[in-house]
Length: 134
Ligand code: ZN
Image (tube, rainbow, N blue to C red; front, top):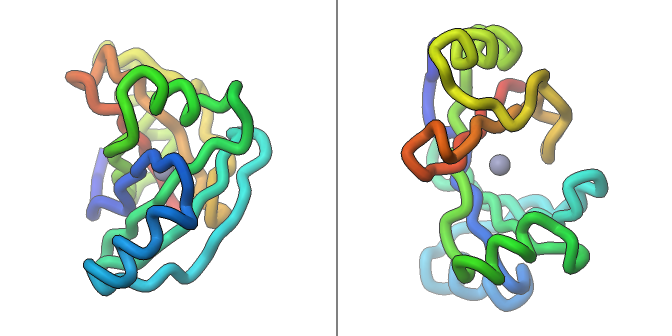
């Protein structure tokens, strides 16, 4: 697969409202979009940092994977998202062929209308890995 850059870092937070002052007032980044992704049970806030974005993730209900993540591991870095240039579907097929366990067998719509898919952290040395494309 051909990765162009880190598209975003996903960071699990208990509350976007409580997290934003750190990112905006201390780091000086600007939040330009807050949106809820219903099927993932998350509310997301995006801040630009050069070519990469920071995606703050807040659970919308206790069953959300973000709620479970925070319960088990605390708030913090949740996933790394790489932008692929030759399509998420191709990248998934290649990863699977190389023995990587997939969370998503096919691309789906994520925040910001990106096509996304996740690789399983058991196959990626503990780092939940997202592949995405515009
Ligand atoms: Zn993400």
